[in-house]
Length: 335
Image (cartoon, rainbow, N blue to C red):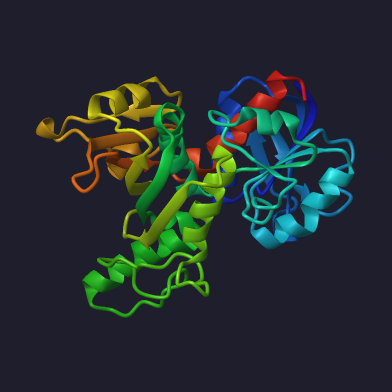
């Protein structure tokens, strides 16, 4: 157990889920502190039966704190989290700013807990679309070594924050009423549409979201040889990201073996009975901390290929849950 734990960004969508998860779990710290920008200072948060005032996030706010769990935009993380490290805090960061820095651990506790335990400063939580895919890849990689991955994502609007959800809800109302609506989070209307761009385009034609899936996968699995070809698409679904994943391994993996590997891996649940219409869907997976896998079948184009469907709650295992699990891991080992 830590002495004092600070939660940064507790009033955001992911931060609120993190608080919910912290309340459900055994105490990770004796006392808690809540930090946010000036516009949230003075607001009251009800946590573990007590009211807590939100305090200002500044460079001096980390004195006396042992563990920081931060859910902020990249620019806020870049500005303030180094001050937390300088103050001697362990830091779990959900932004994307530090993930690929060589001295920063990028952690999914079910996969590389040792990286968190050995970390000296900031521990980064991966991108939401990467997290669920790498959870699915890990048992296959251990059993048959993953050589190549082709993935297409179908990502919910909640991944774009509160404004993304507003664009879907209010934009749909306007569309059905035949009225105009000005999108806030997306460059094109999201209702009844699919947008094949998440993040900015880079020189090679891939978006920043797609490149995260390439480089984060290699870092988490500790294997720079894995080839990843991603396409990330925003769809008009409120919550939960879905992915079609095609994996080529060094040796063939049968459907039966894959089911056993997935079922035995912590944090994965197999839902795979197409004859009964049983497969993962955002509607049935939202609110869960698990990664769901179904539609498992052999790749018709390659003898060592396997393809499947993967769904997970992007605000939970893709963000808040993973961060809280890292905190649990550190507390268990008294770091």
